[in-house]
Image (cartoon, rainbow, N blue to C red; front, side, top):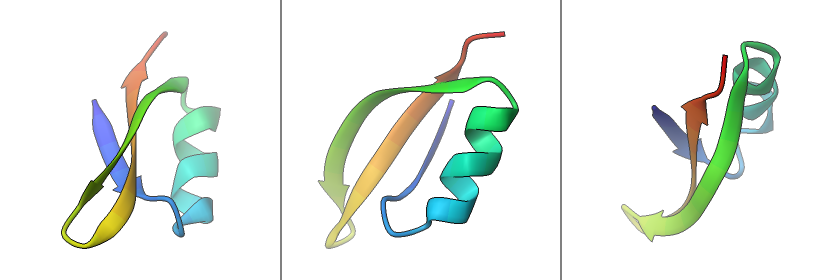
Length: 40
């Protein structure tokens, strides 16, 4: 599992290349977050 801010597009791309898939979006720490799990 991992999460990163939606504004961190580079991290989201790396996560997707590693096989992570998005499962949720939420707000935490005053920012929108992207939550993913490894599907590999």
